[in-house]
Length: 126
Image (cartoon, rainbow, N blue to C red; front, side, top):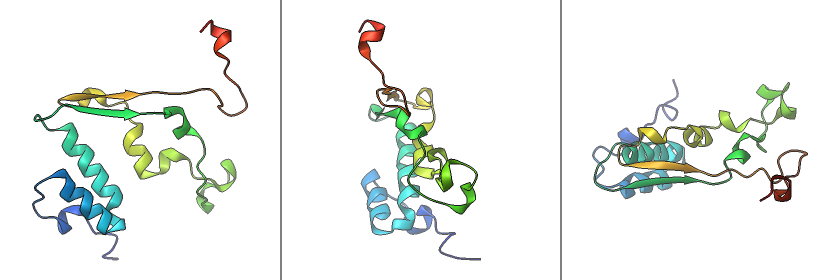
């Protein structure tokens, strides 16, 4: 068992007082960065004190093959890892704005240059 892989944000921070404490723990230890962001998002989803807006732009770009290579994807996309298999991207890909207790999620998508097609606003009368 490798102890560095079992490291959790709760083992470093016993009782954080603010979201900034969680963010600073993720900055200090890069192994905890994704875990810290996930914990911050979880806290924002379940609080009542402030209004929460999660804004995501260029949503369609998150479905393109990433630039990260792995031998596990030899049959797909020339060894490139799909973004939905990356933990940080997967955290924001969900359409779960209805689960935010005191806020909502806003996603914007652009199809201007997706793969081999070009989007022309004149074609839809925009």
